[in-house]
Length: 121
Image (cartoon, rainbow, N blue to C red; front, side, top):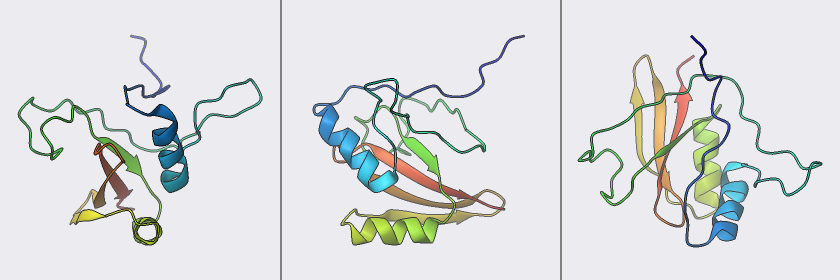
């Protein structure tokens, strides 16, 4: 059986694509979509990727009107949290799960939930 190798992109609707792309670049280091052949897209580092459909009535994402939650692996959760808080981004729900790692939750300017995950080494 042929299998996919990983995500090639995540595409979603937004009221202000330029503003949101700039926020993700500034706070999370995600390059915007290239507009020419010489510009590189964001290149993720290897590691686990969880693909997890949730029940329609889950409260895990917070706001029930949000249809997705992004989860990004980070090498240093404490450092990332400090950087985000210094930039005025609210960080909430810091938890650690034995055998899995540490998590923190933020939201982008449109309220989409983002989970930051430092895998346990």
